[in-house]
Length: 186
Image (cartoon, rainbow, N blue to C red; front, side):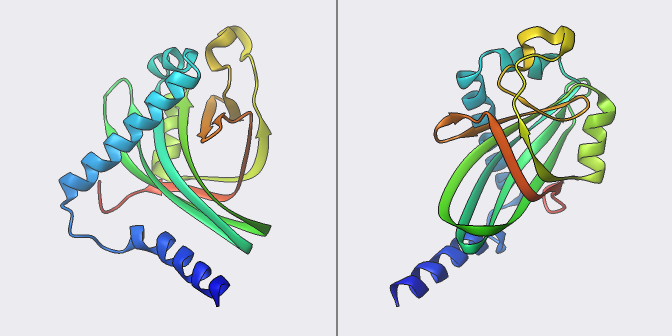
């Protein structure tokens, strides 16, 4: 009985953020911007060189995410913003994740994407992004030196900082993760 109650509570926890709320669009946008700023601040604290990488890039995206795994299935959700550093245009985004495999746990994590080119940023914002592999952090990026220390290269010109409760993650495992525009907030 306890297991069934725990599973039901977990499913409700994941479902509640997706249920329509009484918050206004402006309030929801402010909440997402605040969470994105908290993600940036946490990454800057853990990896000070990330600030320069974000500020000198074509753009960035910052997300706050929540994930859960019970038994053989798991999933996660999150919200964030993508910002074009040149135009200052902000796009509200969502993240959804599906996992398979044995496990049990709950995690909160923050992600900061850094896009070296405007094309990479536009692809992320306009076409979405899907991850389904594992990558290991790189200490240097060619002539960039220490600019991306602690970040994971996920595609040419795209770097990702992942911060968990334990600090900056040196490996990223993202199985069945999709990033896409939030049609309700844009």
